[in-house]
Image (cartoon, rainbow, N blue to C red):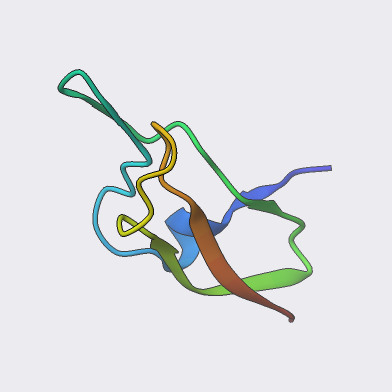
Length: 62
């Protein structure tokens, strides 16, 4: 079954989730089935406990 990228569906900007040694990548994803819809997908850059920033979003049924 095809899965959709939640950030592509509802995020703003590039969605960079990895930032280490001046490398900036979007390597973390939330994948959802087509019968779901993502809202307000965000990268939380305030959490510094890892080399990855957490990605979160709201998800509802279509």
